[in-house]
Image (tube, rainbow over all chains, first blue to last red; front, side):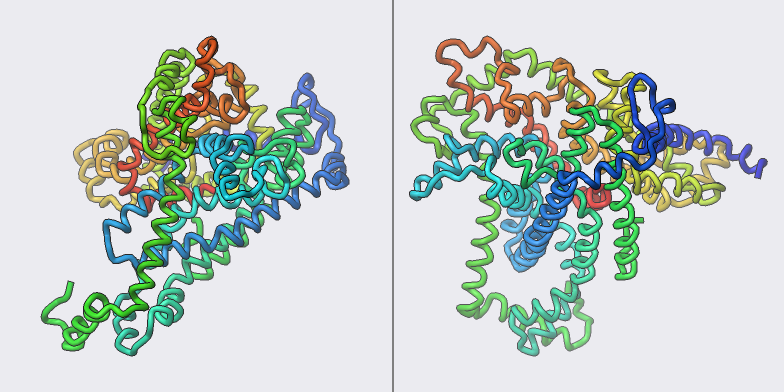
Amino acid sequence: MISHISKQKMLYLMLLPGVIYLIIFSYAPMYGIVLAFKDFSIIKGIMNSPWVGMKHFEKLFADSYFQTVTWNTLKISLLRLLFGFPVPIILALMLNEVRKTAFKRTIQTVIYLPHFISWVIIAGILKVFLTTESGIVNQVIQLFGFEPIPFLTSNTYFVPMLIVSDILKEAGWGTIIYLAALAGVDPEQYEAAMIDGANRWKRLIYITLPGISVAISIMLILSLSGILNAGFDQIFNLYSPLVYESADIIDTYVFRIGLLSGKYSLATALGLFKSLIALILILITNKIAKALGGSGIW
Amino acid sequence: MVDPKQSPRHLTERPLKRKSRSGSMNIGEFLFNVCNYGLLAFFGLVTILPFWHVFVVSITSYQSYLNNKFIMFPVDISFSSYGVLLSDPKIHRSFLITVFIVMASTLLHLAITAITAYPLSRSYLKGRNAMMLFIIITMLFSGGLIPHYLLIKYLGLLNNILVYIIPGAFSGFSAILMLNFFKQIPDSLEEAARIDGAGHLYILVNIFIPLSMPIISTLALFYGVGKWNDWFTAVIFVDKASLYPIQNILREFLILGNMDTIGKGMFESDSYKLIINIKMAIIMVATLPIILVYPFMQKHFVKGVLLGSIKQ
């Protein structure tokens, strides 16, 4: 072993930068989790702050606002799944039926683009477009004789607005994985089905959907593992205290109590609660994805 | 393509298929195509029109905008809103800062990814599995926001331009993608170079990296775009506006509504009316670089999906 190490000294040296990086930027913050079990004070530092056991967790679970943000997180994630998950599949199926290559390419180019534009920019555009006084969307709504809709400030409309804008930004990009799966469906099956007189609908039900069902189930399972990520980037750039009631999620709440109110220990406890559940979800869903015949994440 | 020597079954099938597709297109087929093309075109338009409108308003004079707020084609073209941005030192600085961040951090990311991936791709290296576990744990679990914040604070990186570049330069996802690519390079290349007396660093730089340009360009493009779009780092770690990247200038102006961030002193008497056009122009300034590299990214999309889907 020692001779192996000395012989391969250079290779081990090359691992060093990565190891140092991980120790400083990944493992050191993991040590910081002890904050969740201490009463942190900046002056005493992490080491010398007193241990308080589960105090912060008890405080958290007793707080009704914790239930609000957890419920909001789950609600928004599930709504995204319900309305957002089928859209890329449908778009991919539709694109797959297009025979004119130029048309198909153009649509693909256009619908992939918003994925690469940050939520700050999209939120900026949404704010300009959706304001009740002068936003172009509300001008159109008024043109048809309706009352302007306060998309950004009403608890009724804010969450639907989140879901629709997320679909417009990400659904196109989401088609890539299904288009790849569709390209893998054996064309001979279609030819045989056509000889047997199967119409377009029957071909969809009996050939296309079974052909991409593995891809669909893996994507579904992977999105379930992210159920606690309700879209921090999007919500943080669009929300305001007016819509906290319907759209304040765990991530935005951690940000506010931790970095704005300075309750480091409480925020760490909430963050830890979330990371632990996320870890369990990832481990379970990855197992299921592998069992379904996918490669899983690793 | 059809092989003429293939089974006779194929020969009878081909004409049938052609006929059903184009020859005698029935009415149902026709309606299906109209709906399908129509709906796709509609979805495409809904996606692109907001950006197009932003672009048109940014180059339209304020007066024409007032006359027709639904403007979709530029009339009375005026670049005055870009003029306001160009003459604003804050915009200059943040644009340059962002370009610097993107270039420096992407280079550092690629360097550290390649140098870690190389030894891990050598099957004869002992302790590889332990190192992989060491990496994968960091992909599954993290300390969370507050410990990360305190770490950056203790490292003295608050309000420091290095905070955009150094933390996060190593990512397990990129390292694994790169090492899988390295594994496909034939061992004989490494062995031959070793026999000629080349060291591992030499082999990495002169043999592996030139052969790995497909994965390197994928990583560079996706990491670079991610850095261009990064606004969160500055929100938590930087409160000096002079160190803001372009995304945060835009955030201040458009989302938090701090008009004085941009064009302070520009809004005398009636030029304050430029505001909507300036808003649109700054969105364009932050978006254009992405649109410019977009064509180069297209051939890397499938790998990029992999990168993106495992990062979430």
